[in-house]
Length: 423
Image (cartoon, rainbow, N blue to C red):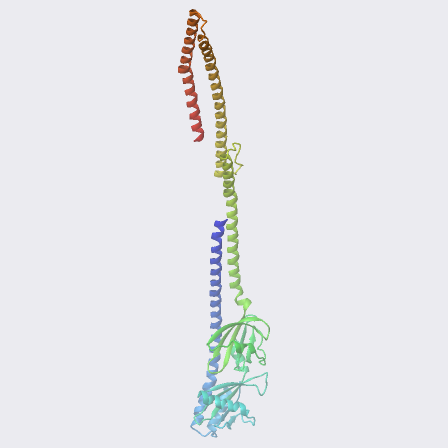
């Protein structure tokens, strides 16, 4: 188990880091795709604005070297308006912001604050400028584009914001996908979700100003305050205009496939880990535990318990090992019994030999005491001496021949058996 844990824990850590890196890579790739989409939208908007600006540049060039009251300039203004149905009006102003000519002719004038802002922006940037005007109708903003003339005046066109609808409405969007254009004040200039018609552009988005960066494109994840859907928004600045193009894709739609794939990988890895742990448990139960039981049994046997036998250890090599151990233990117990029997026989043999030696020696000792008496006749002494000699010869022959050979054979047999049991 320790070995399995030692292998599994590093694998889990490495797998977790790999999944984390894979998620970061997948998310980065998805974010890059969102950036590419919003970049295309911003480029389309830039090209549309460039087309509007080019028409104004042509008028500014014409107004720069002629009197603005000439019929040629008026006819040019009328021609431009006829070809651009979303243009509300055109006007030429002097450096002070006074309208010198407008088409169509109307008494309506630009608000002084808006005119002053346009003039100051053009002078500061020394280029054209764009603002959104909501003074007429909050729900229908007007895009105001102004380009400078050589006489420090300006050519100003007011364009209905609905023109942006015509630009983006032909784009096929999936459900819940949003395309928007936000002005410099953070207010929605255009918004469309999925196949729905364009939303009213009277909405503002305060959280957007906190995430807009100076980068050309950026990707953020926000919950829309308009419909409450959490989306991944790709944002792209429309150069020199202050406008921001957005494409929002629901997080569940964009990230969910990659997230599900990573979850599958994680679940698969977890299942593999659990299977490895289960395999380790099976191995531990089938090999380690039987070996432990066999070791405990061998320790009992080595401690002198000759009745110790290994339990059934299963089939296979472990089972054969247990069977062989029990066979060996049985042989050791049998040889131990034989050694005990030999020891008993040896004791009986020594006792018998001791008896055979003790009886004649007693006779010899008794006759030796009798020979010390002084009242014995010469014949008695001679008879006793012969008896002693005969008994001594008999014992010498018994000890020297029969007993020594028998004792040597028994001791040799015991030594061999003892050596066999030990081995």
